Length: 133
Image (cartoon, rainbow, N blue to C red; front, side, top):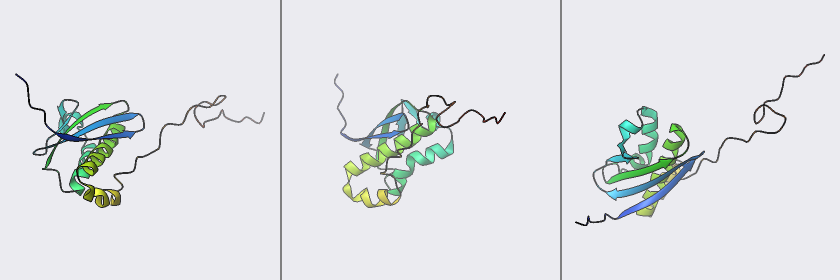
């Protein structure tokens, strides 16, 4: 038996080395990340607030079901990537959300990433201790 395909809009978010592929379906407001509910996947409250911020800003938290696939990075990077992916998907859904999302800084990708290690140094910038004698 073939299942009916639901239509959706998508958005991709990136932060540090984390990538999130977000799909928005018309629905009741459930958020599933890597096959698990939001609360189970992100037990820390601050991460959950970051993730749902685009939905709260646009008052669409109960209008869409969100499905996310993440890879790479850590928990904080993934949370920020998901937030950006949701914001981009909302923008595809309705261009009228652009002003609200832009105002909150949710459409700007955070370009900061880990700096590479330099030769002769211990880390990216840390040098060996200077000895006078």
